[in-house]
Image 1 (cartoon, rainbow, N blue to C red):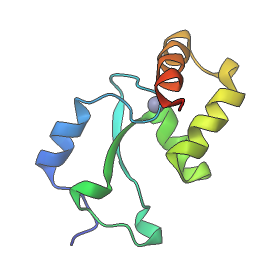
Image 2 (image 1 turned 135 degrees about the horizontal axis):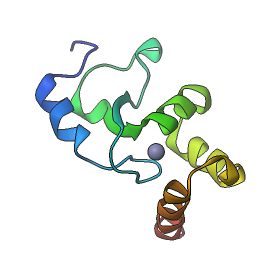
Image 3 (image 1 turned 180 degrees about the vertical axis):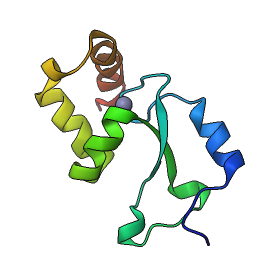
Image 4 (image 1 turned 90 degrees about the vertical axis):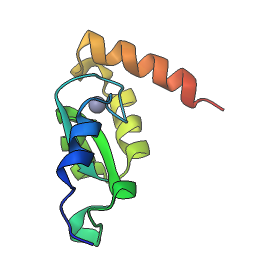
Length: 94
Ligand SMILES: [Zn+2]
């Protein structure tokens, strides 16, 4: 399996909201398991992330860890991202 995602997969995911904060637009395709950690270009290893969450995920590694960080540092985010995050947080509560 190649390390890069195929163009049609990218085209599809670019239209989806960020898998972490729900933001629409400014989407980048993230390797859920980083290439450096052995992740490949299969569709199951792909997720749409906004630019901000993608940067954060490089540091925090998992979606859950990024979400946690965003919750603790919410003032660093735009109104729109925070509003989306609130909705998501409600959804993620057990
Ligand atoms: Zn995001």
